[in-house]
Length: 380
Image (cartoon, one colour):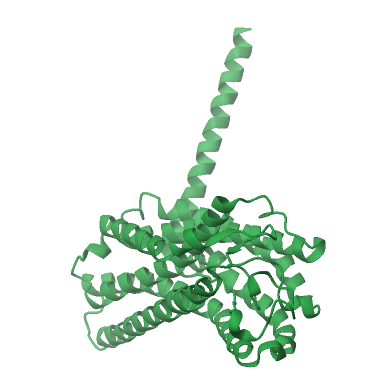
């Protein structure tokens, strides 16, 4: 899920308001979320812009393709043939939150463009405290849901492969729905601090108030960014997927070593494994697209904390690559539909069937309207 990566450096970093004009004494306020005061290292000079322009051009293309793909995925997952499966509930919820994330990212991209070229943003300029709180809260909820839905899918696949004949609650349609609701409530509670600390700043942007800036920065970096969006979900996904792959190779070896490969049990296992491979691809795409951004941002955060003002040259050098990493992370929210197309046989079949049904219904409507027109002409 992609993860938005804002780097904060607290007041203790030797950046003083009298030395560098910065809102809230926040020394590094880069990227996609948190304080949007607009003042940061850029007061000391302009970084290279090629990464920013690449991000500005590619973001709407990725967002458009992702929204269309996620809508098609949602339609297929809610089709009669797939809606009863537990993984369809997870993939449907993932499509919804991925779309919300893409929309929010596009909003941020537009605001960043106007900040860069017009010295002030246009999106958050007219927000009040309540609007800032709700937007910031919703933004981070969507990012966390996209990440932790991958964790639920990995856990569901681990149970499906290791204990295929036991019907755990998480592998039922109703159980999957309850798990998604419980996850949503837990994530909302974890981000409730944003509803208290975020407000409209004097710079007409949303961010943490002076009284909460240090606490908010620590909660955002260490609790939200490092723990909830990186350490915990990545650990869960890697462990679950590793066990799933081990079990798949073990079962395939057993199947190949037996003569009765074509009995019902083995056919059912191969079908489960095809679905598992598709969902594993989704999980590893999540890891691969977010890892560059996480790695760069954490390295930058540590260097800025260690070197203070002297880190500005490094910040300028790495900024374009952070923008590229942001674009790569955005692919996570847009790629799932194409993964389903390439690796999901049932998904391709249901997608073709939906389009075929649409064509038939359009033809029947056309024939019916033509007949009605002819009848009216004959009557006249």
